[in-house]
Amino acid sequence: MSPSEPPKVGSAQPTQTKPFSIEIPRKRTKKEMLKEKTDYKKQGKKNRDAGARFELKVRADLEKKGWIVDKWSNNVEFDKDVKMGYGQEFADKTFAKLVKTKNKFLGPGKPMMLGAGFPDFIAFKVKYDLLGVHGANPDTKEKYFIEEDRIQIPIIMGVESKSNGVLDRQEKEKCAWLLKNQVFSKILIASKGPKRGQIVYIDFAERFK
Image (cartoon, rainbow, N blue to C red; front, side):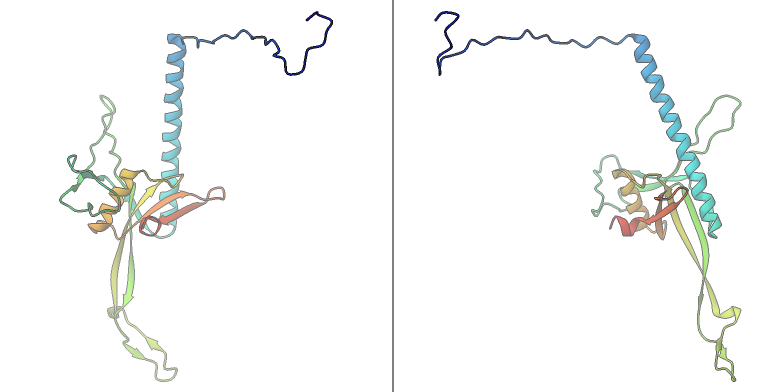
């Protein structure tokens, strides 16, 4: 076929192959790797500082609501030979125990820092319950009570501060163990609400039942 003749229908057309190249990633220098590691450290410090600030806000909010709040310095330690499973019948004292957290050494001449327990806080208040009617006003028939008719019922709960409201598997297992063994009557998860500065409390037993 001459160059001037048109190609016939159905005839194979010559294909042109495009050259290709494989881009090999450049090996990072030691200086670049060190800078990336430093950035991770900075981000980790920022996250810890933000978490500490949120804990203070949670504590102040609970105290404002009438709760007596203190740092909880205990933790749940599971038997390493037992595979735990949240929601299963493993929340037994045979497989775990309540232990005191170890204080952190900050350096010579500096006071030891209190270890972080789980949950973050213990909060309690006294609820008054009426035992019975002491008498009634003869004119209005209105019932009234005296101090001896009331009984004090302490409410003790644990509070864990999580700005995003998310617990990992181990934290869920610890909450289940603490509730089953009646260390706390309830455990609340404090997280940031949709509005700026808002704190939302979620009952662990209701959320993860």
